[in-house]
Image (cartoon, rainbow, N blue to C red; front, side, top):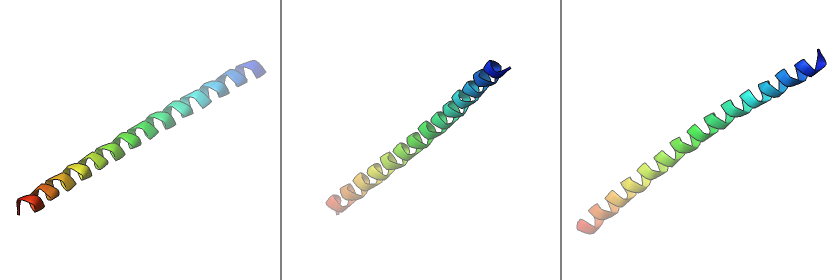
Length: 52
């Protein structure tokens, strides 16, 4: 019984690790997109200031 329990706990750890990893990746992507949007907005505003 004990080896079976160890295997299942290893699987649980792997599953949790995968979920946490994917969630972390998604958050990182969201942050990157936000930064890109901010940089685009800043570029547009600087162009407006230069044009004015």
